Length: 186
Image (cartoon, rainbow, N blue to C red):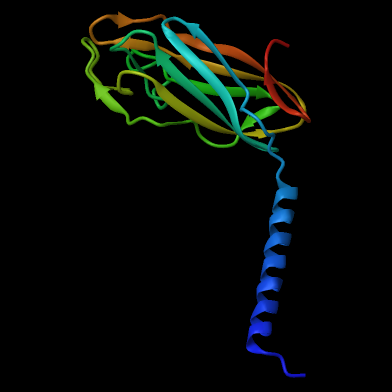
């Protein structure tokens, strides 16, 4: 049987299209992420509004994102790498920890460059983020369905206005089911 080059090319094209379609269907079947907007909640305490969301929901993994926004212009937040008690007692780290059915699956990172400031009476430089909002992310791992608590910590300061009262281990409750995560009271 003599097959024309056009027919041979056409058959290869149909085979390639069929394989591509099969690959696309298989990939779609493997997606486990919930559709719709990411679960989000927010609160304001001690001069900072915190917006917390869950994204990249691919059980057993997800990402927690917290945006810390000082209410007043000219205020900054302290670095996530600041010691828990600050430097010579000055400052508190920006933090996000999880308990319950979520576990940290990496390090908390911030999408802002750290700079240092000098504080009167403190010998060492103090690491802070530039004035304004700071977005942090924490990769997390799910240990099953149930309750989790996100614990947030921060303090905001201004070189002109002074500091707000630090917030430590501020709880935000999260419930995880087969349908995904939701924020709210237990």
